[in-house]
Image (cartoon, rainbow, N blue to C red):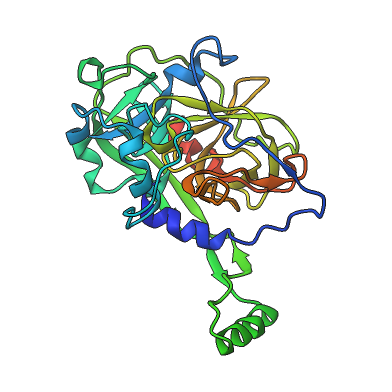
Length: 316
């Protein structure tokens, strides 16, 4: 996810309504992916990372980037030494998923005219050298939708903010959201077919509350990671669903699969209520924070676009 878009979304989704009984979860739920960690091989072979060409030959550790990813001014902030993956190389900006050998779906906010000076790599594993790995260029943008969630303030929230202003306290964020026109999806044609592509099924009407799903992608531009701890939460519109699966910047555009069938059911487009990176007061350093939830069922941790809006292009 780009930093500008993430800042907007973190503002939009900063009103968690947690249950009274709370329990700490793990600090971060991602794990490295490999053939033994996924139930279906296409979850690896068809998941791509988008890399700026100038970064292909760089080997920058996450430890040297992570504070600048989350903060405009990272100076005088100490990184927690137990932060996961900080010794791994971080290279990418977004994720994507092959739905044909030369057709990739990703988030709309990952795509602009600079897409032609970037390269897609697939099944990028920790330790791989991108300089020796085959990359794929975008030939054309078939479709791109990027319309933000509209937000506003209720009468009650406006009153509270006026009171906060009078005592010199900053305003609360919006508390009313309109998802009806929200779109964030793109379809790209690559110059050549991707070697190793594995055909699979796409479920265009996938929603079933509580069904287990698995998110695959490249959080923070790292090598391929998966998160299978979570379920589908709510269908907000005909195209947009939420889950309680934790994701991070860089997961944008990455696939969401049905854990049992391996069907592609959506692509990841935003973070939800929780910002899991910040000051850990217990250690006086910055890292991933334990977030609070009740059995992991109260938080909306991420949002996803179904593939129904690009169905006509897939079968053209």
